Amino acid sequence: MTDSARGALRQGLATAGTALVVGTLHVPQPFLAILASQLIGGLRCDSRREFLRRLASAWIGSLTGGLLLVAVPDQQWLSLPLFGAAAGLGIVGAFRRWGAAAAILFAMGIGGMFSSGIVFPEEGLVSGLAHASSLSIAVIVSTLSWNLLMRNPAPAAAPPSSLPRASLIGISAACSLVLACLAVPAQAVVMTISTMTTILALETSGAAPRVLERSVGAVLAVLASVAFIIIVGTGNNFAVFLLALAVAMGAFEWMAVSIPSKAALFRQAAALFAVAAAILPRPESTLQASADRMVAILLGFAVGVACFRIAGARSEAENGSE
Image (cartoon, rainbow, N blue to C red):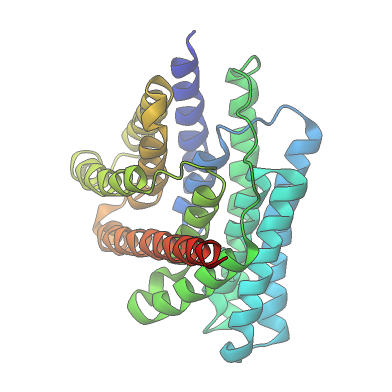
């Protein structure tokens, strides 16, 4: 079996398997678990230690967000800066000690907890704990998928030449959450996580962040999501939905592996598609929510790219002045 076929099967199994579990259990915001499976499904996880690190990262992130909600309730002028600091330092710390998958899960954990409770802390705690549970499901299913299909994978990619900047992650996360509360308050979790994962991806891409390709991937994801919902979602058949989701996510990964020069484009598209297209599959009640999520993920992506560009321009200016 070729690497591209194995990767496609792995991602299809990981995302559809996660969707099956969270859909059956009626976990709130199940699309975030599917996103987690997509983001970490291709990252090596062939040891018990790595598996436990991923679980710990998700829960540490969630509990950190919960601690902020409890410690400074209804004091956004204080909790927002603390959230930015905790997100930046926590993500960079997780990345340095445990790798990219741990950093992603910490970001999704703290973003899911704090963003859902910034206005109503008590409701946010319940929602955030449910979200942390869905991340645990994503870790379990993606790990099983890896071990079933990637026992002898290609050599791991070289580590990035530099660590992500905690200050950039923290500032962008706080700005994104403020904008989300103003523009798409019901999708604040989606937008904040979109921004943090975008910044993390750009920061760890080395000398070639491929911003343009990722932007094209974001647009492709929206178009693919609309087509997916129209063709698959309106049938309201869970089995068909799972099969179609597996095929779609597998196709994105197959193209990413088969065309390495465009891998950033297809994986960006897959990540946004995981959020926008996941209707699980009740179009009569979730079609508008899916449209709102499309807006939120695009706004979150735009905030991440803008902050990354501004920080890069400022760094270049400082280097030039020296």
